[in-house]
Length: 409
Image 1 (cartoon, rainbow, N blue to C red):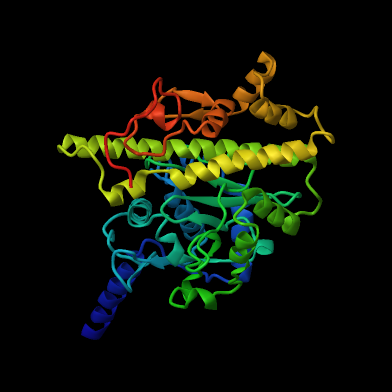
Image 2: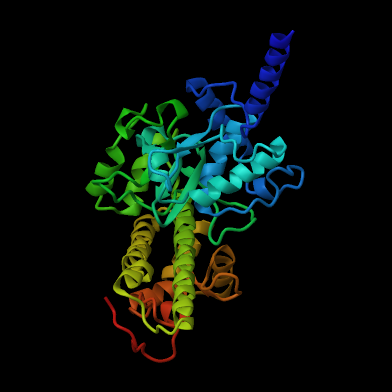
């Protein structure tokens, strides 16, 4: 009799332990599940995913760009009872998994919410390099990601018939928000030729988490060589991807539009860096220090980013000049011409272009400038990369020449 009682107690102990995990995985990642994941991302990973009150588990979950990338994989794993395993960046050699029992006293929905918050708090664009690996450009699928460590990250949600990898992204600061869907490639070219830490990447399957990146299925380094061969030119690099993935060639207005979308996106990304620099400067000055250290200056200044932005304006201009005779009437071509006209464009064309894209100079404020004005300011070297400069000078609209009061490094 006593053995029966002990067996019953043991059963309840074991059962209680198993349910204490965030969720119990009953399936295993393989080629078929990866295909289902790709289909799920394309159909279900939408702009309003975290703002849909019909999904209370995810409703108004706070996130930034890296969080959204991890949560895309995590949520699919949860909903299909697959394992979710990533590296713990704060505990060398340790893993973060769905089997964690930190919240075992909570019901499953609350455990899941806590787990999502925990993953978001312990990961970043810098940790993604350890949980993903680079793949061949012709193999890009929905559910893959683009990572620029320490800068930004995107989720690939669709491949168009012209071979454009459409993306979704969140931004900083962490907050409940709609995701942004962009009908264009991320405005980045893989630059880490040695470390292979950036670029187009795929999540490591849980059973392979301890294996090297080179041992992952589909591992490929070609994107780094291609990027170097085209001298990190965004237009040339994305043309390669488009040709490899496309079922048909891009028409002139289609290509012009995706370049304008990317230009708008990258110009607006700059506002995040300007905001972060001014916020950091405000914080150190509250503590009595007026100027940034060399390390802080390097972290918050934007010379290379501003150089790339100016180069991208030039690349779009080259594309416009080479295609103008083929198409001068489509809306994308007219908007591009508005940005690059030497004389002020007609009001109607200006309004159309500005309705398409304005550059937000400061987060959380209705403070904008046009792409045309930004292009002119960059060409006149009026845009200041120094993180000590006031907001107006960072965008080239200061009334007087900028005079630095702190050391530039």
